[in-house]
Length: 260
Image 1 (cartoon, rainbow, N blue to C red):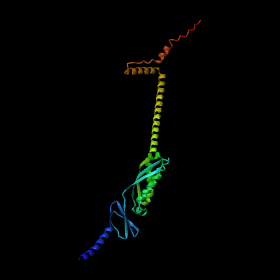
Image 2 (tube, rainbow, N blue to C red):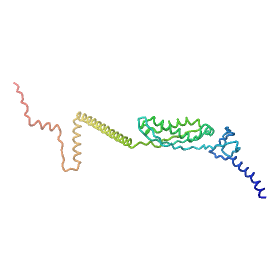
Image 3 (tube, rainbow, N blue to C red):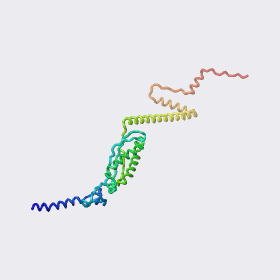
Image 4 (cartoon, helix red, strand yellow):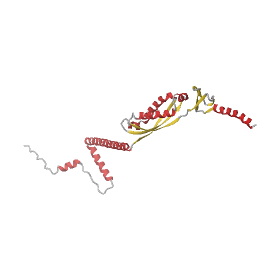
């Protein structure tokens, strides 16, 4: 009796095992690439699908956006500066059939392509361009990757440079250059200020020279400013014309000519 029960359970167990291997459940973001006797049969999902064990094979593909962290790459810029650059890439599978058939392990292939493209594009720019035009470099890398991976059914949605690292010698050189540039700008600003001040003084001198009354008003304004200061000593400036008259007192007057 036990042997008969065991014998009857074995076929049931085999049937359940076959059904378990034949039934596949795919989530909303998953697709199944099905092959029949080695030939492409179709893309299935999402939901419940059934395959024939031993005759059909099934490859599950995730369609969600993936994040690829590109390892740091040593690059020599166009102006011969050695830098270390890394990036992050966002991509997703838009065609499960091509992602499985056209390339083996599309994740590894995308990573290798991203590394070589990063080195190639960054090496075409100067260091100043790397630091100031990151968005332009990001877009260029994205366009190249998107064009190359389109045949694999992959869409590159975004590329971002993360870090641009320099050696300590180059960092010190850049700091010195920035300090020199700040000093140069400060000197230029000082020179422009002195030029403007001298121009204003020249204009004021022209106005005072054209109007003696303006000079007297300026003299009185100076006296008011001096009187307003908290000082025990007050200095009264002597007008230039008064000094000129004083200097004439000690000189003998010219003799008058007699007329017959």
